[in-house]
Length: 56
Image 1 (cartoon, helix red, strand yellow):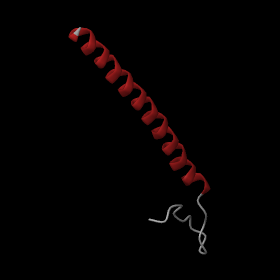
Image 2 (cartoon, one colour; image 1 turned 45 degrees about the vertical axis):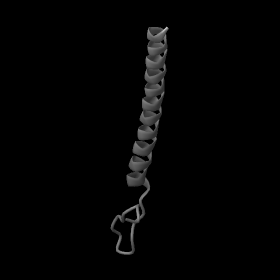
Image 3 (cartoon, helix red, strand yellow; image 1 turned 30 degrees about the vertical axis):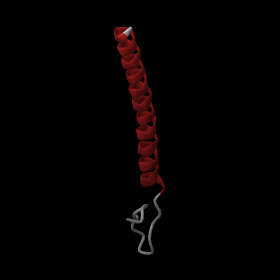
Image 4 (cartoon, helix red, strand yellow; image 1 turned 60 degrees about the vertical axis):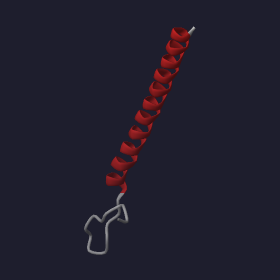
């Protein structure tokens, strides 16, 4: 009974880790797209230079 519970617990942990990693990959892709779009849509300042699109 104990080995069966350990196998089920291991399967649950691996499934949870797999789902979390997949979700993190989608979040990373989304952040990368927003970051790249920031370079495309950044506005020019008064002197005609391209300004930063973020406010850090």
